[in-house]
Length: 392
Image 1 (cartoon, rainbow, N blue to C red):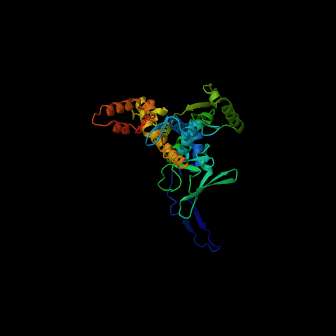
Image 2: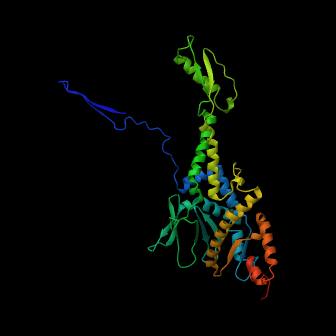
């Protein structure tokens, strides 16, 4: 409360006292939450490079999706050899198919956008390169549609122009309800949980390094039960505590007290004990945002699936396959603009170990359906109408 007094004059005029209307109100609280920035670079640092849950979730999805066996086919046949398959097998001199696709999936998960550059002369590209999304910006035309892409590195900008033919850039983006040109990443949806998880980790680290909360108190009693330490005594005690009893290397070292000093241990409060649960809840939220069952990340307290095998099957069915199917479909459509023929590129469900049981059941169910023709059975199983080598 602040009091402002207006002093009287020499004639001893009455004093006028003014006080704040809220002077009798005492406000107590935890303060306003401080959240990290939501740009791609900051989110990647806080949610991937500095957070083990986000790092592992992104790596699990990207590596699993990039390792999926792919099939290339058109309406008539499935190809064992094709120029597009050769290009994907060795997209550039520095990367193979798995490395390139892992980068594409990783960028898509971290930023909501992924960009592939086609290097060539207008026909089927000679090389494919994954470009960093935070360096790319979309150039809009008068009608709002992209007419180019600007890629900026070290202050230098390169313009990829989109013409009537095949685009030199393949832009893969996640659904964003409030943006027409850029995607929305799971990392941004999990940003608040990532901040909580990182703050809990920092708190735990500070507790180990600096004794963030006192584990006890040293009480001084003089000869008559009263008194206080002198400045020299206080400084010496503080120095001994810092050098002899702080840090992990001094854990368990006995303390020798003298001269009326007494140690009073202090335990953790209930709020301190809940801190670990808060961290585990934040870790589950991060895993859920990415679509990874918490059980696969070793997060305790999750009983959604009966066992690890069911959780792994759900991970592939609900997260990896939808992502890989969408990305490979976009890449196939983009490369079809170069070749002039429509091709289909998708994961081969029959070669995924996690789905072996249900695929076997599907084949048996379709094979036993006597009311279906052979062509209908092939269509239901995702096979082309004509096998490789058939004349008809």
